[in-house]
Image (cartoon, rainbow, N blue to C red; front, side, top):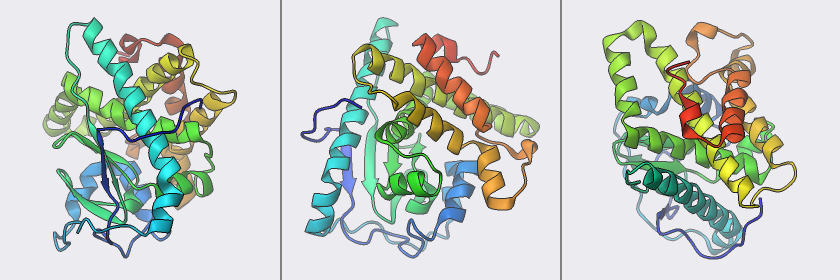
Length: 276
């Protein structure tokens, strides 16, 4: 991506200090938990026994801080750029966009949805309207999922902020109601919600491209990331089998298709996964 380093977003909350909570899982040893989170969503966070302490907020090592600062600034840039795009879109429709905060943490932290651990990957919590991210996930996205590049990282952030847009528009609540009242449709509703978030990420990518922010190969990186976290790819990697009935996020092909749809149209109205 084309961006200028410098500064941090006012909506960035840095909790990387200290050991945090849930340290034993960590990024390297928690791929199974990450897979579960991707398959079953952030609700799995609530399954913890509540025996963890909250982040102490201590200082991170100076070397780590210096090493991660360029990535922190990139995350800040994407966070602000995505939210600025949605702010403009909401304003045009006569609505007001309320920005989400993005929480950086290490190992684990308390969220409004329960205990979040780094091994579970990035997630959005509608109860506190925050995105949670351990920067180590980006290394996993590259090494474990084969999706390198800064735009792959940007796709992840834009997807999670897509869930914030859904929350503001009431879509998340409607999906939860469907899941509670019609359990047989729970997985299908979850898939549609996730694919819409992919489409919303594509809408932002369209805006970024129009403003000259994309570099050659960026969309390929984004599509690679969308494909890498498809349910079929994750199931095949983790169990050697694919069970379509257990999909909660969509197949690799579906995720690429909806991300592309948002990118090509640049219009959130094209992201109606529930009417398709």
